[in-house]
Image 1 (tube, rainbow, N blue to C red):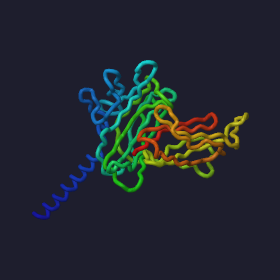
Image 2: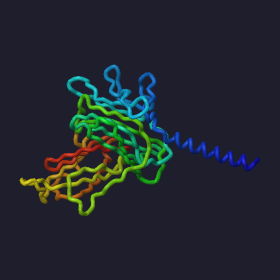
Image 3: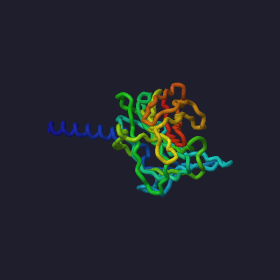
Image 4: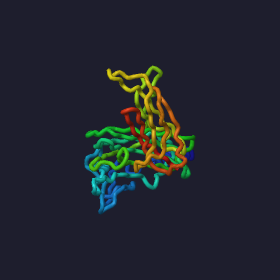
Length: 297
């Protein structure tokens, strides 16, 4: 009987290890089904009753019974208070997920942005993460994939997920909202790099790594301004790449010069900035693009 007992013990140890690994990677309330007393379990939200409640449960779900809904609340004087939610404190981790998957609906006024951020720490130090800004409204559920990057080979011991709505530079618009459901870890999507023969176009890439401490790289593309006949020219244009805090204050200028059409990369050192979410904006002629980055110290 000993061989069978030995085999059984090995199987039990393997089962415990698999269960422990699954538990350690579980996103809190990932399907947003748990709302004891109408309060979202596993997440800290921006709700401040009775003044405003802008993160609520919704029957407009992707699956199950509920989804989470965040709406920019009206706090008077035409000022919108944006919804935010975060898994605080962080949840335990013991692996390096490639991407966060989920399903969403958006109704965003022009200039508003829905931002998802994933951050991983080991021993209190940031070791990886990613962010995904979304600006296009959709009335049907669509899947998002937020790719995750890592610095070094450390295995995270804690994870954090944040969701927010921001105005591009200032307050968000009252009534803008998001619906999110069915979060999970999954595979990453391929990132396409422009080829040598790709025509220069105006584009702002997501910084990498993100979140970061203290340096990150931002890629962007500059296209020639169109001439009177509608054909893109080959001359240089004034390019400005700046970083702003959530109050719309410019905290860094990374580029402010004339540049020829082409692809560029610039390194940003946030050593003097506090932990938090910031905007970075690219402007070239009449073209403007904005994304978010996360400083994690």
